[in-house]
Length: 374
Picture 1 (cartoon, rainbow, N blue to C red):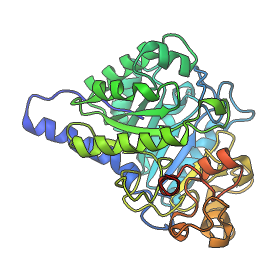
Picture 2: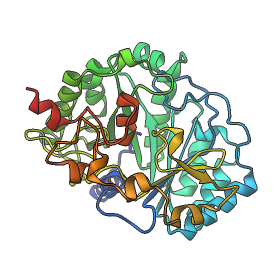
Picture 3: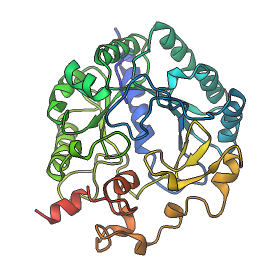
C-alpha cells in the first residue's frame, strides 16, 4: 500500500496533492468508527493468480483458484455491492492486474458510484496500466515495498527484480499524479530497514502504511516479530507521527499494530479502536465467490458463496458475521479475558489472534498487555 506523487509547480498543485494523500488515509481512519448497516470498504480478491511468491502471503497466492468468478458473475457482483451501499471497493489478489477484466470491473465500480482502490505488487505496472488507472480516477493506488534494498525486498517477494519493478511503478504513479501509497509488511528480515524506507519516502508526499506479518499461509513463524520488536515498531511509528507532519510523511499503523497503550499514542486505522470490523464495516470476497469478513481470517469464517446466495442476502442475513456482530465479553480468550479494555477492544485483530493462537478474541500482540509484563 503505497504512494508517490507528481511534483507541482504551484502552491495549489501541492495543496491538491496533499489533499489526495489525506483522502487516501481516510480509507483507513474511517473504518472503525461505528457499526454500519452497509460496508464501508469491500476487499475483493480479483484473482489468486500471482507473479510473485511472497514469503508472508497469507493466501499462498500463485495459481488461480479453481472456478474463479466469470466476467458476468463479477459484473453482477459489482451491482450487488452497490445494492448494499458499499462505499469503497478495493481490488487485490494475488495480483489484480493479472485478471484481464480488471479495467472493465474497475470502470463498473466507478460508474456505479463507488470509490475504487487497487493494491498491486507493481511487477507488471507499465505506462499502459497507469494510463488506464488515470482514466478510472481511483480513490487510492497502493504498491508494496518490503525492503530498502533489492536483496531484502526480492527475497521477501520471492522473485529477483521485483524491487526494481516496484520502484519503477512508484515513479510512474508519481508522474501520473495518482493518489498512491506504499505498504510495508514487517517481519524480522526487514525490521531494521524501516528507517531507510522512511528516508526514501520522506518529503515525497508518499503515504506509508505499516503492517505486521502474521504466521499464516507461506509465512514461517520464525520470522514473526517478537513482542519486544512489535512494541518497538509501535514506538517507531509513534515517533514518526510526532516528528513529521502530514506533508512530510503521512504514516499509519494498520489494524494489527497494537491497542490501548498507556504510553504509545493512537496512530492506527482509527483514533478510537472498537474491535475487529470484519462483517461490520468491512467485507471481503474471494475470487471464487466466497464471502468472508476479512481475508486474513480462516475459512471457517466464510459466510457463503455468491453463486448460492447473493452478497445482498449474505450481508443482510440476521445470523451473518455473528462472531463480531453478536460479540459477547465471555467470548474473549485467555489473553484478553481479564482486560479492562475487553468490551471495547474485543480481543484485537482477528487475523492476528487466529494465526498466533488458533483462537478468536485473543490477540497476544497488544501494547497494553505487553506493558503489563514490563
